[in-house]
Image (cartoon, rainbow over all chains, first blue to last red; front, side):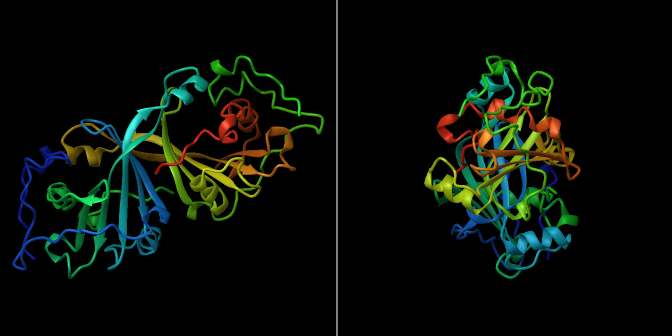
Length: 169
Length: 169
């Protein structure tokens, strides 16, 4: 599989849709994005959490379906077909209520949900993007423009099958 | 039930074990703490996430057992007996790897696990502390000193049955 190089990826942000509108592609054609929200994702088990500052001010809860959780716990890569990883994103906002209890400004909680992103492993369907289909949903609707730069960044942690998030013990 | 007042609680931090070593108690006697880690908690579903600065630099993933999740989703308080809420705490640390990809310092992930806390609902067993048993485990062992101030703070969000964490949609 020939992958398009992204020499400037180190300068990109994950929201850098202007800089990286060119998705990876190979002889098999253009990348395929995930257009349906995987059922039941809010019941999946926890992989980890994350917090992005910069332009994001974002909280993430990263969940996995059974196949993804099993692969994480066994430390197996590549992830098997059918594994799905979900990143639930929220605004990272101060908690006035908690701060009153703490007596100082120190507490941050999820604010409004911003988007939900998925990585769906299917080595055939998503062959053009490392076997992963990428998805970005806002208000329940897929946003193609936001999916295009996914692979450019996710093509980096090769040792972990293009997945950034590590399992939180 | 007569509850001891904590007029200075607004000045306390949740780690303020020096300031608040007196746990709530009533005629039934001293509070009872949770001494065993509830089985299977790492498989529970997500309630929410949190981030504490101040002296903590802490990431939380808050999980609930089936009874807790059901009560949250139905918006029912008080929580039923048997509901358990788990807070998995980690250091809040920068991700060098993610920052290289983003091209700037903006990404934080869970570092080393620090402790696991639980609230276990049992209105009889934990009558002295609002029906909740509190637990704080470090390296798998209960730490009584850290449990004593729990109720002093958790006695505040009465409208939500002494639970601070809200459900992240």
